[in-house]
Picture 1 (tube, rainbow, N blue to C red):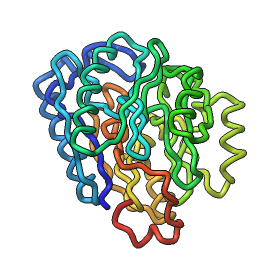
Picture 2: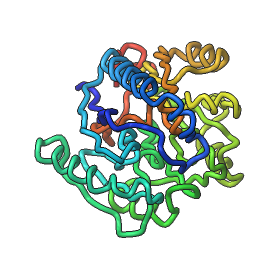
Picture 3: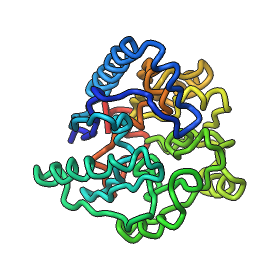
Picture 4: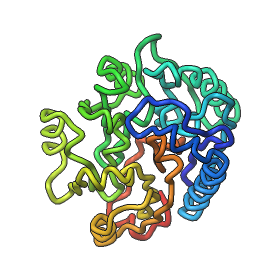
Length: 296
């Protein structure tokens, strides 16, 4: 079956406030008309690249005054057709919760999800941006310390009935796990070591052998190319460095590199702009089988 990916229409996207170090409203408003056109073009290019990699898209409408709805990765964690909705730490994003709740209830009514649940009030956890399913290892990795609370992790584990490995994020620049940590379908991990507390970095190294670690330096992570969508051997991502391009190609990955500059002005890129609705605990294919698949 084709991967099913949720996106949000970018009609209301802009950079109008600052809730992370990437956000530069002054750059956006210097030429808002041109930036809106560039954002629409970048979003359309991302949608086309995802479809070319075999994905089927579901698109929710955005809403005036909620520019960051364009990043649905933060809306929920989804596994086995069950969605646990996010709660946002920043006041600017909390009005998104009702909009996404309605959108997910609509997906449930159409049979794309079986269950839509909510976290307790005040227990901030910002969706798949801070809770990544590692299909090959059969567990979640969960970021905390910036925008999601460690106290939310037991709720994730209980709701999904899966192991959740906590990872403490120590840099406001890498405010969500998905901007510095990308498990790949072949078993490798693309990550920026400098984003993690020492104990969390040790936990990563304990679970992932050196041969499977692809470390990005601060400059490479600053391209937001680690915020990538992996579909089988296809990686859809913001433009990366020559070094990472070569390393990933050597590992057998096909890169679709996109100009996502308008969204990077807000601190998000390809993964942030998507949410997989079809992730499953079903056993993953072995890495050697992935080479024959257009998407997964």
